[in-house]
Image (cartoon, rainbow, N blue to C red; front, side, top):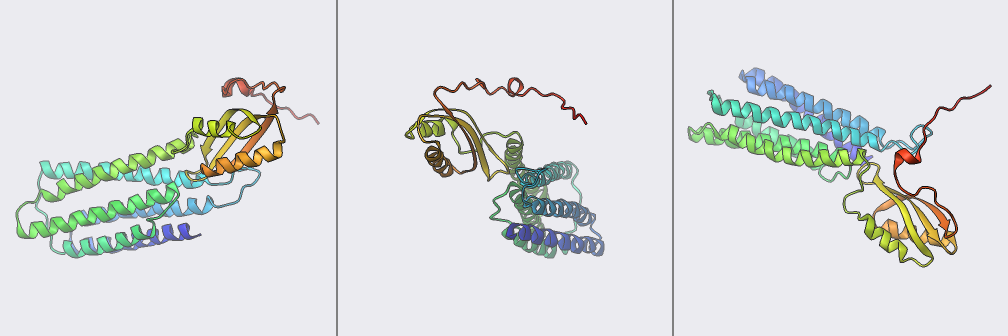
Length: 296
């Protein structure tokens, strides 16, 4: 799959650059570069896990996962997002320390590393830029963080070469970290919403209900449940009260829901004379959980 391949390319680029960065840190004697290389190896591992989970998410439904494995991709998004959050807070912490306790920084060779860092991570960000899954969006955000981080290093190195303004590096680092944090929190919210089966963004249940009731033969619609499997594939179940041919009405309902981006639809039809026992959508009252014993 193309999106798996794109994440894999991002993983390889990130890992190769981490090794290059580590040896560069040893060569220049820069503890900061070595520390960032170790951080990037952690990033690469989280992206590698995202590759595995993205691949698993494409498996077909079976008896154990009747809706398929799509949410493995969402798990990958959650893991990558948590790594991003912790990384952003670490950047802010270290930047604040450098503002409070300024230390002399040797920027010789940093410009070269910064240029290579920007190019490599920009390339990785390019390959993951059009991701439609939450997992690929999180990986792309990860790559964007690295691109902006190295741009900060590059600007800081150039400024330090001509001025004595050493605080530019930590100040800009905080700005980048805050930007990444804001976007990471948005991605985290989307991930949590999928797991909590919240109505997908951009879908208005009341609007859909009003459209469905306007279909000839539809008297009422209730028990509408709309959720997303993975942030892009939306599902819906509902009870529809009808007074005419069910097959034709179901086709019209599916067409209407497809226009709203809902692809997996389950419709239970009822007549006006049917008594729907499920008067509300309280799961606790609807589901009586008990133990089933098998007798031999």
